[in-house]
Length: 443
Ligand SMILES: [Zn+2]
Image (cartoon, rainbow, N blue to C red; front, side, top):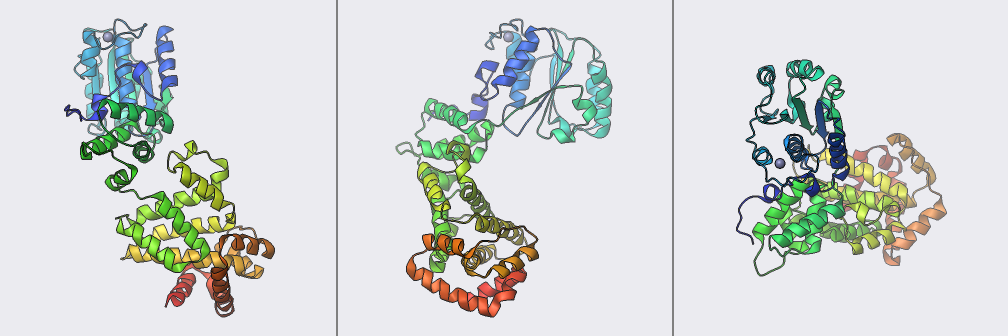
């Protein structure tokens, strides 16, 4: 590993527009407007964390003030660019609104703006997390924004555009920075990994891409962690990466789905406990479960790339295959139950048990849903208030036959018959009733 102790996000921070990843359109627009000498009074960059807002703000400040501006060729060699990169340029002031929110801070800044630039063309204020400014601070700022002197330029960055007064937004040229595409981010961190002399498998890198959700900074700090834990002789594979980042194998979750639909209670519990033993938090588990439900429901409209590397090829194919056999209505019901379980987790003391019961509930729900009579279905629909399409009996048995083996089919069929006789109405009135039924079932 490289001895350089600087964190990767700083070490590889782009210093010019050409080095930015994923924000080409923004860069081009800015460069063109500068070339055309149409420089707005204020720029506003918005988007999620770690996609380059402040980086672009600094590059923009350099582009505005660098003597080589139009060609955009200055590679941090001139003193202007250099000092802006180091946040030490006399005419470029950076302020973090997260720590300076008050009207006095803004007044001070405005006072400073009365005098023209010392050494460059423009005096530039970069205000990071600008949404944190107080209302009074915004008002104070607004007056200057309305009629700024020629030499004064503002560059704002924010993760929360909605908190910025519309009067301020309307005076800025606004750029919405997008999340970095998975494939682009993957190529990027792979390149850096190689430069750093790390040995990390592609699947492990894809996991990093997935967790960072399109944020370059997050991806780089995860890569940092991965490189730090790396044993110099071994390649970091997906399994070790999952351990480091507290993620578990999606294959296990897909297996769990299969067991639920087959109605194999032992296997359901056993598989979940295995996942739990890996240290997966119940909330993380349910969220991953929800994600998988989404894939089961929508796999037909997705490509491997559009899952943000959440699934590997095998998992993708397996879900494709299984989803053909599962009724969409069941998946929608599962979704609702998962969401309510997520809420439930904050009020129970033993979350682990709660999740186990949740899975058993789903298992019984799916078998009953297919087997029960249509009028019960109606009841369920009205009590939840959701327009779930009634299934016809033939379809139901066809679907379930495909996914169950014969022994289980018979077993569940018997169980369901007795259940429906004894608990018909109870079962469907409320969620609690369902828990009751499942508990009875378990004992
Ligand atoms: Zn320069």
